[in-house]
Length: 212
Image (cartoon, rainbow, N blue to C red; front, side):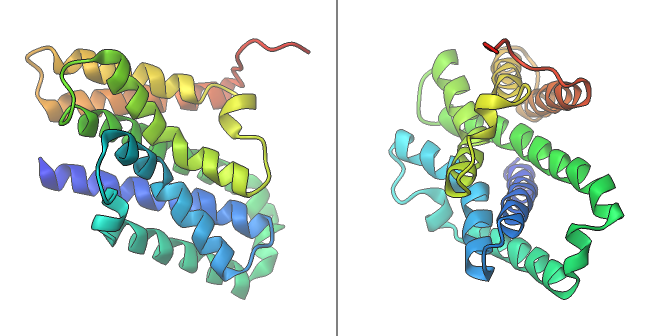
């Protein structure tokens, strides 16, 4: 189970780091800025989670492997674009970039939502509201920090269903944990629900009500 969770953490870290790094590259930040934004997106939600849970130091600092993966991912993307800057404006980029970034964000959201719930359950008695809150914070926290640092309105506040997908996925995971279902299966179902809702929201352009 620990190996399974570690693999999920690394996949989520790479996915979110890619999202943050590409935002930084589009904002024309230097290599340091790209790494900072990539790492912040990847581990920012987890750091918020650990602070609330009273974990000191946060896991991202106690086990720097996650930051190292985020930095390696961000650096690789920086040099790919640095060597071939036209890739940002090419037809291939216009066709595939948004889809790739959507999937990075979606996969990261699904993974970190259930990992947040899983971590919270180790420190607090059964409490659905708290578990889901921590799961959502873990899933969206890094993206919020990314957008603020990039001087953008946080994505979750203005466009499509994002945090709500995390909320539903977190609830599914918590409910599944209460059955005879194995923890791994419950995590996979929670992730799947989050990813499916988020993907459908992006595909069909679902948005919450707003005042025009």
